[in-house]
Length: 371
Image (cartoon, rainbow, N blue to C red):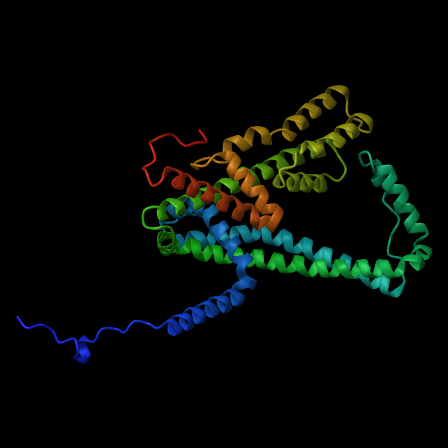
């Protein structure tokens, strides 16, 4: 048998890289990654929301696809259009009205015209703080010209800050709308998207633990969607119905406050307490009706204590406190998107710590930790 001649051009072995070549290649790769990250940075929040929405809506999209002949693309289109109509149209209308008010306030301040109309009489009937707000509003409306002369610069700066905040809010709304569209694309191509994510996790975490980490990330996102945002929405809806039946002034605003408090993991009972004070001091309802409304509002204000253990951490092999701490820490540091990112990171970190503590030994069969 003839031995191959390594000196021939076709059999030539690649020469080992010198240290200088290796450093140059690593530097160029790092520069390329930095430029790519810099170019992608404006779309990072939108893509995070798109992935969160796609992961959260995937079970619903699968059910809808089953009713539409098994087409993921058709189901994703219908789902995204419904979401845009239900959420996008009211948001756009509310945003346009808010823009008109802010611009009018800024123009009035710039021209020195009176911008505060007299307060409605209904403001005086608001729970606890209604009379104080009514008196302050009435005073500002009556003496605003003299008030503006003393604080014109401060008010003008305040209106400019409001315009800047308005611009950032509009940008966030547009990004959220675009995230729905991108989420629809991801849902339409569920199989390739899942295969790509699986390959990435397997490449980073290894073929043994990569798929497990991917499933844990998906389950954590869905758990936070239902256990934090879902519970907050249900509680705000229950409280909103109760406020509406009680005839509480500012029902919509109070429901939105309850929703924000629920997402921030602050007890919504803080909204119920002033309403109960108003109910027993200002309402014209009978004693029996007041008792029934009070019981309902208290139960609705404490509903998160029952719903959260049922939904948060469901189907996730990570203790509920880990997910909750990750969600809270992420929201404090990075806003609403951090609610999901923080929970996923802490859940993955907890799982990696478990694997490291076991030293590679197989985990004994057991029921999920949250059960």
